Length: 130
Image 1 (cartoon, one colour):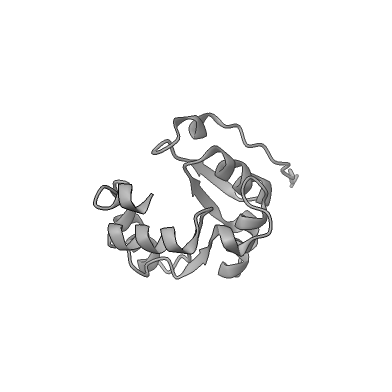
Image 2 (cartoon, rainbow, N blue to C red):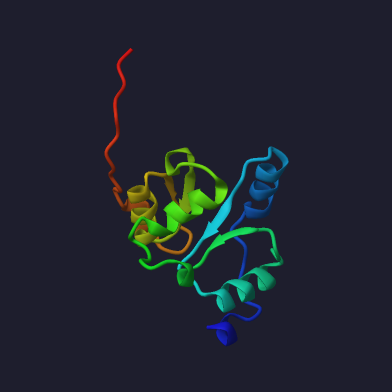
């Protein structure tokens, strides 16, 4: 993978600006990925993102990977937030399912997996009556 991807990775349009705005507004964020440490470090270096993602949950950090909710539950815990207070951005069907199962709100991106946008990731919600 790294040999084929060297020099070919491109940042999703607007990512740096978006993350910069989050930092400026002091909104915490984390990277939750199924990738291993070597590939994450490679990708971050290739994209010039370096240590931008200080909080990370990698594939090797969890017992059960996506679509299980554990990765996003751990990501929320790293941020000190309940998953219900988190917004996940996902470009893979299993990631959308994982984030939704954890209780996060989810934005399904179609940047790498067009089918991710069509996933209906349902979760139980409580209705409150005033």
